Length: 344
Ligand code: NAD
Ligand code: WQD
Image 1 (tube, rainbow, N blue to C red):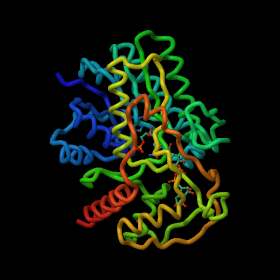
Image 2 (image 1 turned 60 degrees about the horizontal axis):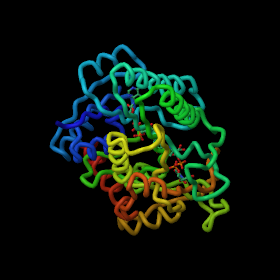
Image 3 (image 1 turned 135 degrees about the vertical axis):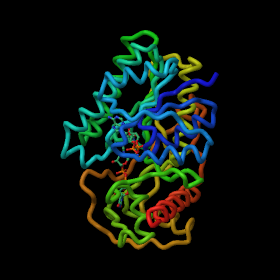
Image 4 (image 1 turned 60 degrees about the vertical axis):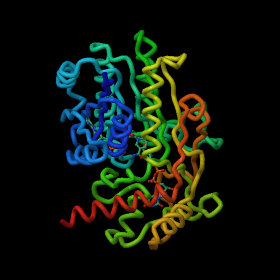
C-alpha cells in the first residue's frame, strides 16, 4: 500500500514540486492549503506531470478543529511535510503579528495533531535566513544562528526551537528541518513553477519578467559589495533538486535511520554566485538579453552566503546536480508559459 504523506502548502512553489517528486516515488499525497498564496489550478499542473491528482483540502492550518477533521478523514498518515507559511520578508516587518500568528500557530497545531493521530514524522521548511551574514563561509549547520533581522526570519528560528523542544518531549516524534538557500527555476514540463503576486521580490522572477517585457529593467541592488564583481552572492538551488531532498528526508524518517530524533540539514549547491554571474548565465542559456541598471544596496541584504552541503550529501545521500543553465532555462520557459496562459 502507498504511504500517505500530508503536504501543507502543497499548492505553493516548493510544495507543488515536492508533491510531484513524492508521487513519482510512490507516495500518496494529501495537500492542505488555504490558497492564500497559490492557485487551485496547480493541481492540474501536478496531474499533468504525474497523471495523479493529489487529494486537496482547502483549510487554514490555524483552524485546529478543521485540521483535526482532516486528519480524521485521512487515517494512516505517515508523515507531514510542512511548507505552509507566509514568506515575504518586507511584509513581515510591516505585519509582524500576522506572520507570528500564521507561521507559529499553524506549526503548533500540526505538532498537536501529530500527537493526537499518531503521525510520527515531520519535515519542516526552514531557511538560510536563520544564519544572517555568517562570520565564516561556507555555512555549516553548526554555524551559530544570528538574531533574526525580520519577523519572518524569527518565525523560522522560533519554529525550529518549537520543533526541537516538542520532539524532545514526545517519544516517538521525529523531525528534520531543511534550511533552504535560494530556490529557483521550475519543473521542466513548465506545468508548475513560481507564481509571484505583484512585483517580484526575488531575483530570478524579476529577471524573467524583465526579459518578457513586464518590467523595464532589472534593478541590480548594489555593485559595491566586497565580492569579486561587487554584486551580492547567493547559493541558488534548483527547486526540483530541492524537492528531491524532501523525498530523501521522508525516507530517512520513515526508515528510522537517524540516531537523533531531530536533525537539521542545509540544502544548497555549495556554490556562491553573484547577480552578474546569474545575468550572464541566463543570457547564455536563453539567448535573451537582460537589461539592467545599478541601484543602491537593498536594505537588509547581506553581501554573500552559500552553503556547506556536506551533511546532506553524506547523511541524506542527496546532492544538487542540475546545471545552472538548465535551471535558468526552466525559469524562462515557465515565464513564457504563464504569460501565454494569461494572454488567452
Ligand atoms: P509559497 O507561498 O509558494 O507556498 C506556501 C503555501 O502555503 C501557499 O500555497 C499558501 O497558500 C500556503 N499557506 C500559507 N499559510 C497557510 C495556512 N495558514 N494554512 C494553509 N495554507 C497556508 O512559498 P514557497 O516559496 O513554496 O515556500 C515554502 C516554504 O519554504 C515556506 O515555509 C517558506 O518560508 C520556505 N522557504 C522558502 C524560500 C523561497 O525562497 N521560496 C526560501 C527558504 C524557505
Ligand atoms: C538575491 C540577490 C539581491 C532582486 C530571500 C529572502 C530569504 C529567503 C530567500 C525565505 C541579492 C539581488 C534581487 C532584484 C537584485 N526566503 N537582487 N535585484 O534576498 O537572498 O533571499 O529569498 O526564507 O529569507 O530574504 O533573495 O532573490 O531577493 O536576492 O539585485 O530585483 O539578488 O540583492 O543579492 P535573498 P533574492
